[in-house]
Length: 275
View 1 (cartoon, rainbow, N blue to C red):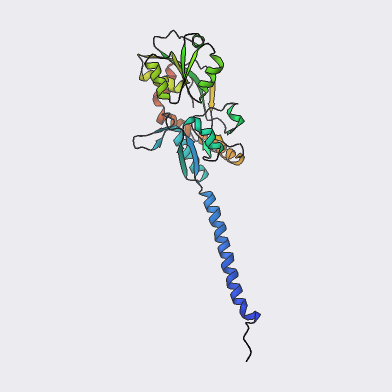
View 2: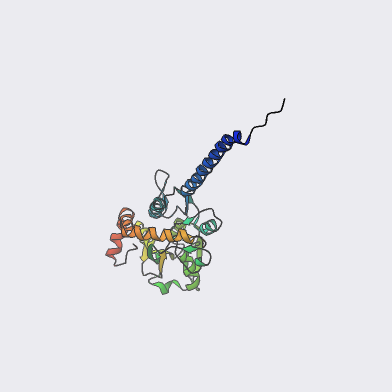
């Protein structure tokens, strides 16, 4: 009796079923990969110690203007948002090493930073000001650059860079945190703290008897979203978002929500508002 060998015809149903299964699996896999790419979290780095732009609210959640911008951007890109709370000086390294995809942290677009990262179109323009001790002999910018004057700056900020370049005669003290620098002014350990005009105005109005605010704009600065140099397509989409968000009055709404007092105060003092 001969051994039975399946004919080519009898194997056709088996190969056909295998072909359908394989192709179907491949199709589902490609759809799944596409879907996972679409749903890949948008990892945004920011230093949550800079209210009202970046902060943690009473419920222990990220909050502030930059957080709201990040949420609107993630919805625009159809990607879930993942906020990474990173000290300001660690934001650029985190972006360059791929830990985060974007920086939205009140970061000024500067030529020095452009050597290592890319920036979106600016979304806010603000000046650099000085929170001055009430009894200090400092009435204008020139008074900062004198022997015997001690100026506080925050590490990694444009205030530090400006002071290093323009105040060779003054003594500079560098602090990691904004609150620590403000405390130095209140305790009369320094003559002034260089920071953005918005924060200077806020701290002065919280401590009107101990401080004065110089809002003469030591220099104008533009805040923008930081990206990797290679992420050209993402930068284009971010710029499209910023244009749309501005046209839809998104920045005006954020100003009304988070900066109502500052808007009124700047108007009274004749200082252009940031948005």
